[in-house]
Amino acid sequence: MVKAVVLGAAGGIGQPLSLLLKNSPLVDELALYDVVNAPGVAADLSHISTKAKVTGFLPADDGLEKTLTGADIVVIPAGIPRKPGMTRDDLFKINAGIVHDLVEGVAKFCPKAFVLVISNPVNSTVPIAAEVLKRHNVFDPKKLFGVTSLDVVRASTFVATVAGKADPSQITVPVVGGHSGETIVPLLSQATPAFSPKNDEERDALIKRIQFGGDEVVQAKQGTGSATLSMAYAGFKFAEALLKAAAGEKGIVEPTFVYLPGVEGGAEVQKAVGGLDFFAVPVELGPEGAAKATNPIGSISEHEKKLLEACISGLKGNIQKGVEFKKEAS
Ligand code: NAD
Ligand code: LMR
Image: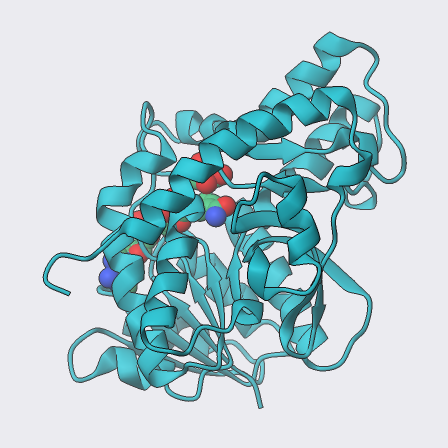
């Protein structure tokens, strides 16, 4: 029996993500939590004729405890999204506290669950989550994931467009590093099937589009939010992969932002990325979560090495900011 939870379930990502989870045969129970409207979203989804039993809670009457108790997988898209002109780091002030408090709930009520952090800035909110779990002595690095799959989904789509391929899902491009601007490093040299941009201009434009794809959506939505539907698709894709691996399916590899010292293979990646503790790489998933981090860094091009340098210096500060975050009055 698998119980999935969405925290921030009434939001732009939360609602379509909850719909996809309700539609999944891998989920038996779906619990939704938000500061507004979660019971309404749950009532709506509960009429869908799939097996998952749906409940919805608000903070009152121990709602977070009721939501999280017995959870196997907790997906967190709670928090404010960007408006045009903002960076993801501008969201830190509000979202850091939200993620902190929700992960405290995870530590108390479902410490063994997989935790998938979507809330931005991911480069900092995942370290915050790790610190909270450590403080409660329940941190299992194999079970904490920063969700970076939207970068990988975008890379497939944008490369397919440039390469003139009809089906983007048949193209895989590893995207490593973090989840904001220059910390997002697409490794075009390792695309499968192989892909070579026509020239440096085409390469640079493609990389920029993958790194700043989020801005494209923020601009197009004109102040009403950021990517929600593509994020729900990407977040569900990752959650589904994790649930399949937990159920024993072998050979599943998904890129995700993990705590390297706690994952097999992580030490080798750490050496290649200036000793950073958190970094997104393709990770082999297994019954316990992150089974093995793979290291694609050894075989990258000279240009990608430069991108990696910029990534490492940006990511270092973002991680530090998350680790040092102390919630007022906590
Ligand atoms: P949204 O404003 O539409 O929804 C957020 C939801 O969180 C709202 O329903 C809100 O009520 C809820 N919420 C706020 N505080 C809460 C709390 N303490 N407990 C529970 N719920 C709470 O925003 P959105 O578009 O769904 O985006 C959510 C977050 O996801 C943003 O931070 C955004 O930047 C991020 N995001 C990340 C990625 C990624 O690739 N990782 C992609 C897109 C968006
Ligand atoms: C994205 O990549 O679309 C998200 O991180 C949302 C944003 O702020 O761009």
